[in-house]
Image (cartoon, rainbow, N blue to C red; front, top):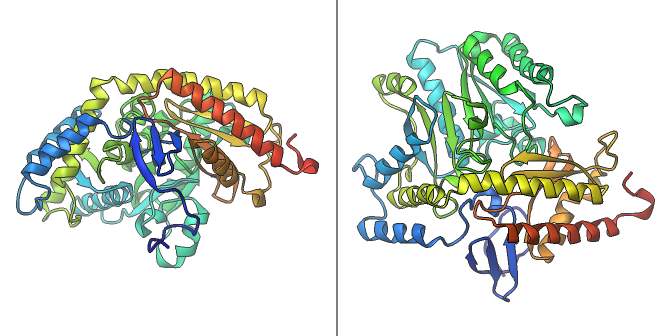
Length: 445
């Protein structure tokens, strides 16, 4: 009997240990962590340099409340984080996770508007589908019906525009006209809502779990930035999943030389070694808020020295092992091999992503992009089969959380060619086993 509860009643084996890309249960079975947990463990498990940095900090202090003390660990991490940001983003606010970071970014944006005489601005436009966190504030900007609808009466829904899913809409993602088509939906939404009421646009540079590693079409990012700038709308980049090297650059937005107004970080930022997240903003956004009486926001564990020591050590490991370049190199190889799997398995209708943020989507018909019947719960069943085979992958549903099953393949950035061989072998086996279970009369076209 367990006294814990999370999403459901299903039990899992007890974790015994984790090293590198592997995890073992108490029975001795080994699993390859093909999703880095929930796209978190970017530098792999039990990195000795990070553990040693945490031990050193524990001997100094495990907690120092930010209103009572400054800490060397938080200052060092803030400085190192700023070094990796686009020019001008030089003020850091630490939190404990992604949902807290998203809320912090929105509240900073709002307080800046109030402090600078723009109190009419309060609406944060986001996309559908999208996922920005599980708190009520973060759910208000999340476009994922399965997670947000039960709580709709409890929150103020924010406006949304369609995510740029060119592959589903039959548009060429390499055509700049496609990027303009989707970006102009932001322009239209701003006009509809009233530009003087729109505070910010919140987006993931490469889609996370809600869209399955969706890469924006050519020209989209640049046009979005121009639209935001022209209307005085702040651009908030949710890099919770894409940040800390996951896509083959430190920030996902770096692939397009983006300079957002606020960057949101978590997950790989401390790579699972401690709960940590943060926002990074320009000084000219922060200064008016502080001058007006201070940032009316905060969390008890903000800037926790133990978490910050872990985060600093994680960033040092990214540099020491050249893991961002490894993510780009191994990600290109893995994506190529996933495309080869698609040629062997008709059930795969699309492969997408950047670096080691990759996904494939199940479809019943590639030509029409028709999803599998939703009552098959393909994303859940496939994850179970892969887990039984010793491979951990992550899944969600692409089409507003209702249907459209996709599988995220996102191993740690320490992955080697040998690990890639294992991943592909286990995926191939799991795909063969899953398709063998499908009803013979309802096969994939």
